[in-house]
Picture 1 (tube, rainbow, N blue to C red):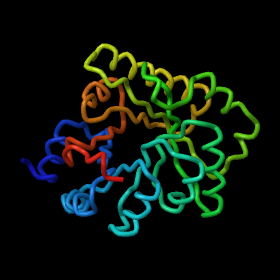
Picture 2: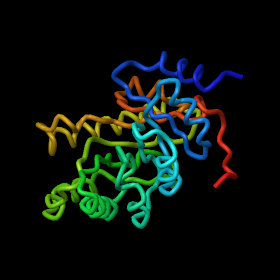
Picture 3: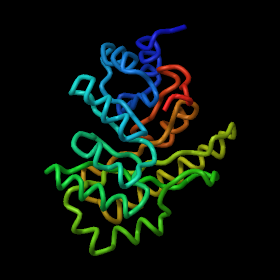
Picture 4: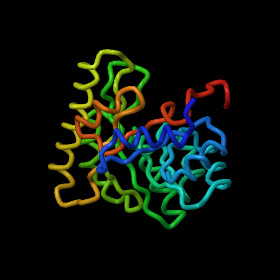
Length: 226
């Protein structure tokens, strides 16, 4: 069985320099993250706010923490002081709460809008209509403590590569539409977070700038561990 360092190296060899690797460390112990850190990796993804806060307090402080799971509004306060990027903003209500908590911490939090692109009902995210309604709302213009940097999406969990590719193409099209309409002069609006362990090569071909890979680095997750 390869080490975490060897796994990281193998994945990085498959990823172009323009694409950022988010090592998904959710449910993994501190020792595993420390191993990846010592191998030179700095960007980690978590999906539970309190777990992420605890890890941030017990690991080196130059780690970039990315929140990648469904985030409940009442949990934003746990990560607002230090989170680097929230990938999974899936509602206007959540974005307003992130802004509120960021203001308390005197910072601006970078966020991605999560779009619903899959055929599975279990996935979260905006529709394009909902995103347009939010971005044209006067109240949105008063959110000075968040910065939208791009989009995120999860493809259907399937072996159908044609379907996966089509869903990634849809997310790329959403990004292009938002960029052209609302962020044409904003250099920071540049991220497309799509692609995980099973589908990241397709995601990269379709324009991903960030891939979220866990099991190929750390091994299979223990879902019984809370």
